[in-house]
Image 1 (tube, rainbow over the protein chains, first blue to last red):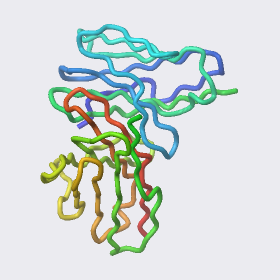
Image 2 (cartoon, one colour):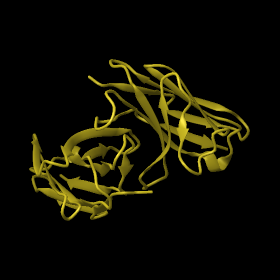
Image 3 (cartoon, rainbow over the protein chains, first blue to last red):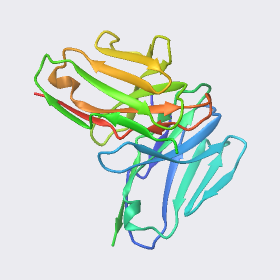
Image 4 (cartoon, helix red, strand yellow):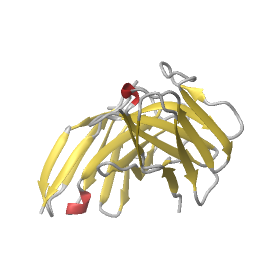
Length: 110
Length: 116
């Protein structure tokens, strides 16, 4: 069953703006991961944040994790047209299997 | 690094045909490979997990006789959809992982399977 739920389902922004999406999950986790999927392609791993971390940065990406609220957020700063994709959070509760959320579809308008 | 190649990218075939999809880790040894199915505008659903040299572990509701998985080496896993029917049409994605629990998965580009 799906563990994570992303919010919003879809997001449309102007190039240069920031995009924020949220993920909520249900059970305890070892880590939470964010992936990007371009249309018709596989997933690309973006960032992994461990349960004892609160914030992590990678280039224009910033991820936060609040284990007390069982939620995470992904911020993409200064968005570009190439950031247009679907973004999924995935959690690994207590084993190696990832459970993916439904995803947020981001459209960056030029 | 961490490149996973999935082949073919697209298959169109008649009902009753068996289709084999290959997943290769090109520059690392994958201790575990995963097979997912994705319906349009939906998330990935895990079908099965395979470790090199052992039988795959299938998720509940996935027919092991329908979806045959072979993981013969640390760099290759195959998924065979046997006697495919239109309802098997979907986007199938593999991923490979090295190092066990907590490590990222590296995904292939997926296979679009269309059964006529």
